[in-house]
View 1 (tube, rainbow, N blue to C red):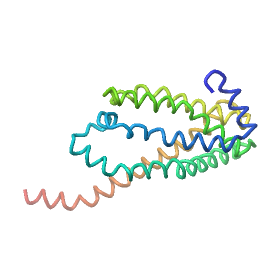
View 2: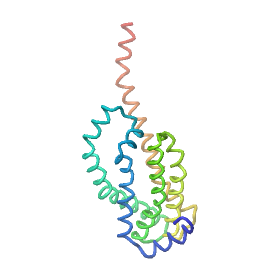
View 3: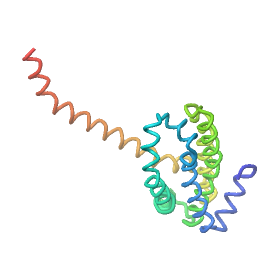
View 4: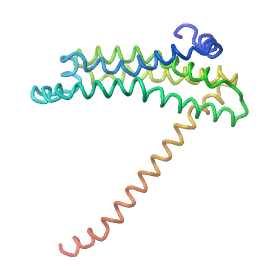
Length: 203
């Protein structure tokens, strides 16, 4: 995945290692929980005072259950949904692939996140958690590139079309978010208009 990503993703797409993909997906989902295992790491990452730290430790079992539940159930569900979306978009563009192969390649394309999580824990332990985004950004870009490769290899499409397929859901979500924000602020402004006018007259 590091030295020969295209060939590796092509091989994964053909062999469809679903069980290994699910195991890797659970591992990737649980890795962020490493930050909460050590009290020193948690203290540096969350910037908690002793009283807040004690309160947080009391609810740690609930956080643990949430992370395990998310890693073992929610992560595979979201991965299935995203795989279905990319598969449908690729078919709209006239390409035929295999859903199992795409699922597996998209999961294995997230392998760089393992390194990102490890470095985040190291930075949190050293008290430099605020700089973690600088270190994790290259890994995020790396994962995006690998996922585009995964789509391309799975459907034998050009890099440009694979990039378009990958970013269409992102663009749609961004546009919907902007529309929702505009509607929310418009509603708030319309509700506050009479109150502001009344406040102005009293002044």
